[in-house]
Image (cartoon, rainbow, N blue to C red; front, side):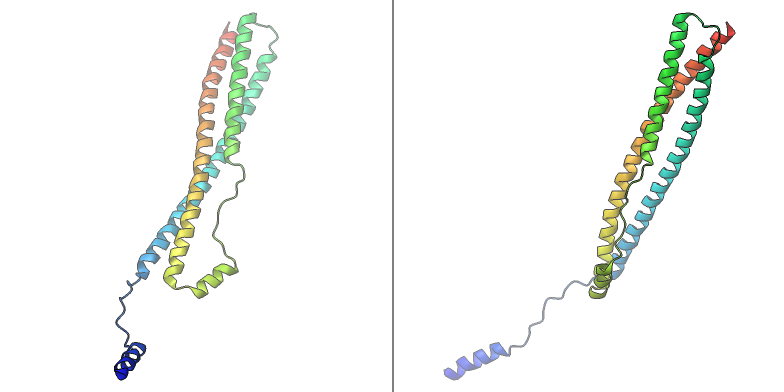
Length: 193
């Protein structure tokens, strides 16, 4: 009986390992594909950011030229030697003021869209190097893909802000353009009279 107990304890102590349940195989190619996809998405967002910056800069330049030209026209109107009827002149001044105001608001929105902002970027410090040394390639791919996803979302937020500001600038430019045409028609009718 004692021998049986010792034998059982002995068998338990040196028990053969039962086959463990197999861990699921990690598909390295799947993680690599995810990493490559996120990397391409980040490049797309960076390119979109750059294109928005270029478009805003060109738009700002065009608005600056338009405002300058309009100021020259306004200066010419206010130098009229013979003053037209008071109400007509008041109407022209009001339309000119509204036009200039709308141009300035549009210019402000576009300028706001190109103001300097800090953008997210991938880390490249010593901890990243250690991470590469210590982890398996699958973990590295997955972690980098997650980091790319966070950066992509930050770029998208910034791109949406830029786009929104540019849309408002465009809307005010359309309004300014309408008032510009009205002011030119009023000036033309005065000169024809």
